[in-house]
Image 1 (cartoon, rainbow, N blue to C red):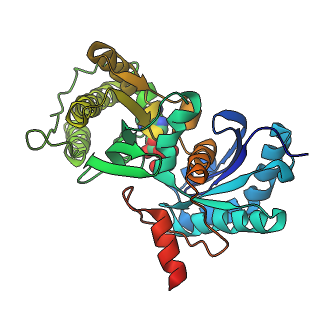
Image 2 (cartoon, rainbow, N blue to C red; image 1 turned 120 degrees about the vertical axis):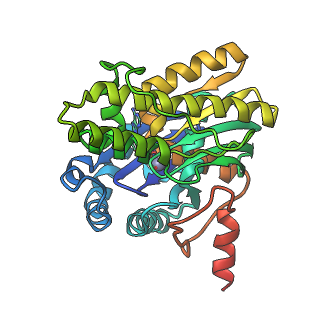
Length: 352
Ligand code: KG4
Ligand code: ZN
């Protein structure tokens, strides 16, 4: 007998997390299994693509079986299989898509190709299914910093983006010079709790008046230069103070620009997304600013902010409702703008 709920299985392997999740009706998480390779890549100070692919290959099946078992779902109950097809590391994406195709073929299930960054945004709708487009999203991850107008479940328009480093990348680089462990974002967040955010002044970079673009390389370089200068003078660097000061500068700009984007787009709903969305100061300050401005702010639980497959399943659920399916010829796109219609690319590639 067919399961009475709509079941979506999501697969995510775009970077160093091997993840499989099962979602009922696009919002109830029945399982969300994530196997992180962070401990393996830590020794190299960053993700090594070849090693990531190899570990996806090894982890994929156990993660998949655990996800089904934890959800108490038989593969035959699954309505569609969603998989992140880009952007990300090519070899890592190939592992997830090849696995998704194999499962789709074996079980006779339709395949839905998902844009990884769009999935990060959709993570917000899992816990807040009452939110519907149009809304604005601030996406802050290791590779992306975007302000997006979400105009439909498959229509995304860039309002602003970073012109150089992504926010997470800046956190990671400052953490490295401070001697904090990889990944740097959570380490800075933790160290900053004991520091004084006013100890070192870092210039907030707003670019041209009214611009919704970001630039984090200036703040990052200023923090790195400050650390080197202190060391050259033979002074001990106060890691917590530098972490707190850097974090405060980065968060100020993110919060201010998110509110500017809302007013430019005429929206009063903001969805925060991406790994940096688990930063405690960003969450706190954004909450305060949105409450003051009467904005409905949606911040996913931390586990749904960093890479996971529940967000992929949620995006796939909404895409299948629009009839947007892929097939066994699905390719991967390591570099993919959030404005690019993945399904058009997919169809064009198949047409040759
Ligand atoms: O979204 P994500 O898991 O992967 C990408 O698609 O990039 O984001 C990872 C990024 C890393 O740069 C990591 O340092 C950052 O998110 N991050 C944080 C925090 N937790 C993760 N940055 C600041 N504060 C945090 N608590
Ligand atoms: Zn991500």
